[in-house]
Image (tube, rainbow, N blue to C red; front, side, top):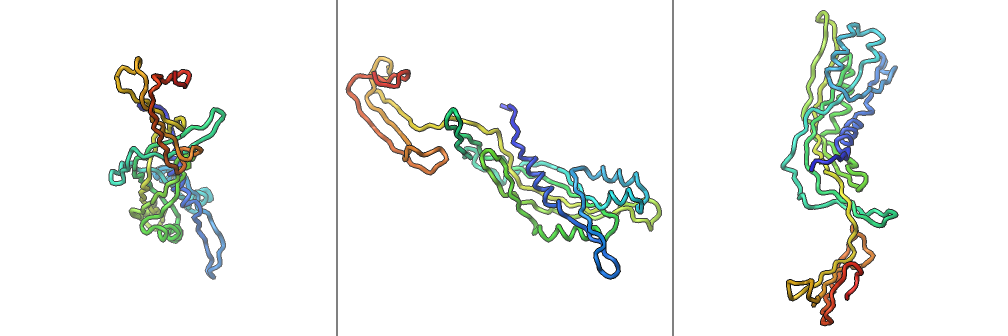
Length: 267
């Protein structure tokens, strides 16, 4: 039951989340209001504690090493929870016909399972002004959600719109030494991505014709078929992912013959 498969659904969702904050900037101005420096805030997938430990290792905010460290942002997955309110019909399928040297095959995947992935975004700056610049570039886009399109299963061309909800913003100052020394300004933003996780993709051949022979006796090995029902797609050139109907043909027989599956003929 639990064979290996990896659709990279959570990885793609996490990348899509991180890309939302990949172009945040801070601008520093002089007394006349002219921009003297523009800094693109680095973003990394890492826990908050990693950066707090790095801050503790560098007590001097004015040193060159610390200036390289801040401002900075990090994000991480905090929780993954099943969302029963968004459950879908498990029997429905996503389908795509593929053509290879062996012929046409039908790749399909059943409806995905709804999960809520919680992310935490941490913002670290050396000044209150820098923190406000970063936060103001994020908050207006979440009302309270922002929708991204994720290429869930590229092989089946499955794309899904995923709302990312901003749950809250926390603020704190982390400092050491005397009370006049500002250590760092830290904002913690929590988000929930309402995404879906897919199971393993499957492949089957494309059925273009169904034939059923009917008998008046349960001993079909010694009795001849009396009626045959043939069902074919209409048009016959349709693929499994096309919009098509069916043509049903019913034939009656009195010739006493039986269908031979080996030779594909009546004998």
